[in-house]
Image (tube, rainbow, N blue to C red; front, side, top):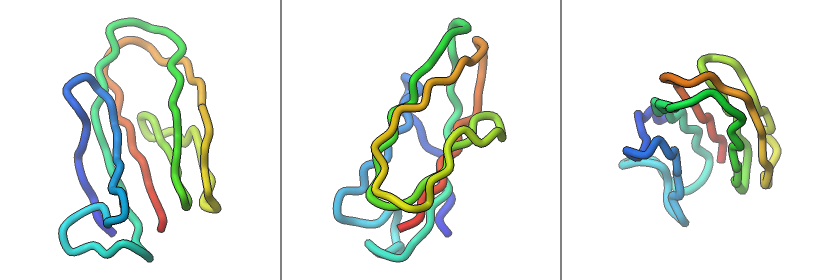
Length: 95
């Protein structure tokens, strides 16, 4: 299992590995990955998480599971109300 800390300065958590694997030494198939990023929100509101994967994934926000589908393909949108402030986003993938 690969573990990474990721995230763009704007708080986006985008992982597009194309035809490759998620990291050095990890193959294109038969892997799992656990990726985390910190997100700072300026205000409380409803946020929409857009999910796209060819296999399975789970999403956690601050340790609470908001999405669980280990049988892809996945194309989903998950709305969730979040308070302003810092949050930890965790994505788990299986290929």
